[in-house]
Length: 323
Length: 266
Image 1 (cartoon, rainbow over the protein chains, first blue to last red):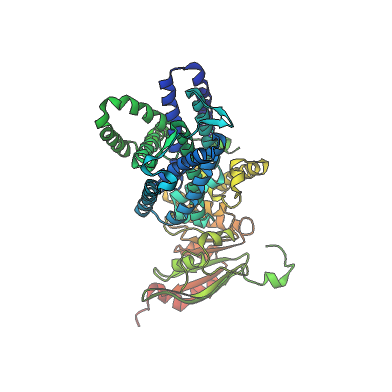
Image 2: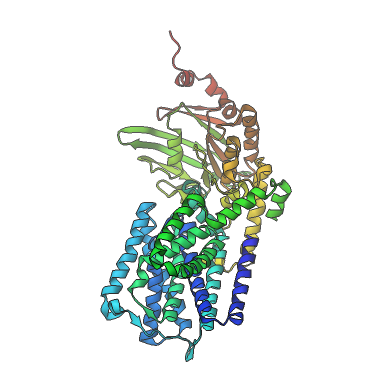
């Protein structure tokens, strides 16, 4: 718990120095995308790791956030400090509505219904031309942070996404290590025991689901401003596949896992650009290998190694931990 | 329980079930079963396999909705309430098939059991104040104390899936105790314990009354254990109440012996 927190803090502190050390725009772009994906993967992890159900519809919240920010910016000319938080809130409302339906389902039913919600939103975005401009998408999303102060360089965007990532990690950390987070784990591990100790499985799952939707909405809002364009592709399955790989590779149910997964996959994706056509095939193989050999991802692997190396836990150690 | 200051309230049983009936399709698992539990009591619920004991448990704790009948707990009607809502009133159960959170450690299991004591608003989750931190500290201290009471201190940080069968049963009780129930209901807690362990376990159970819990309902096949801990025993057979009384009376009861062993050849 403390170790995880310190690693996260060290990561954020190290990342904050990056724009002052690196001036290469290409590397900064990669770093921005890595952090953007880190927020997305962390938000998906709240659903996969703490509701314990596999959502294939997480792009619904990414897309909702992106469209919200794009509309507020292009129609009302609002700056980022307003649009991005609002994008999160609108996504959270969508999360509540979709969760109220899907969280009553479990297993494959949950997977299918979440997937269809994302698909329905994509079709709406594609066809509701009056609002979303259909397949043409919304172009020219503003890049001003406060009033007229515009973000002009990659370093500025990097600091913004770093701020969002810090918020996402802080909220996830607080949630996971709270009583509510333990309740969510109880539901995931054993629904019956959870109920018998007074946990409401539906309400607990809803908290994690809405928090995940909120964070994905923030990421979507940022994406809209950074790319300056939002089209129906934000609801496409490609984003979903990337998020899943990140969460599975890093290790679901941990905080560092999705972060590590996001960084590794973003870098790997760039590296594999050479073999464009083979990329998805390679990712498919990677996912299969993870599921087969590292079911708990990299973090699970590391935890296992630590467990094996640690001497038998003594009573004193247990007592120390509880103080 | 403290001295009787308000006799009218104290005379009310802690739990009272009236005419509970449960049918599954054409099969009646439990029929018109009525009983009650007084504060301070340990009640044993026994009966041959398939008598309907676990079905009773599930009806009392909201996991099944009874086909007929009512359950009152602390004077409130809890029939058809959700399991978690019933648990929040202080009626906490364990399960016959061992149910713990296998991937969590012993300590984490028991800490999770403190859910109700440390429930907080979402705002307090994200921006914890001193009250939340204190609740968390208290939950951790209490969890460690419960683990020690149940004799699992050596296994504090062992993941639950590494525990022996007997240790798992103890852990299950520890998790239930962590929820600070007023009525604890244990479904075959001594299954898998050897006779020595069962004896120790019975002694632990007796110390809980009045200290950690108000009353205990125990379903158990280990007769030595049931007879030694129970103040009163209720016998179920084929879904109906066959007998009720003090352990000594039940041992003497011919019908009970017949239910378990069959009629002696005449």
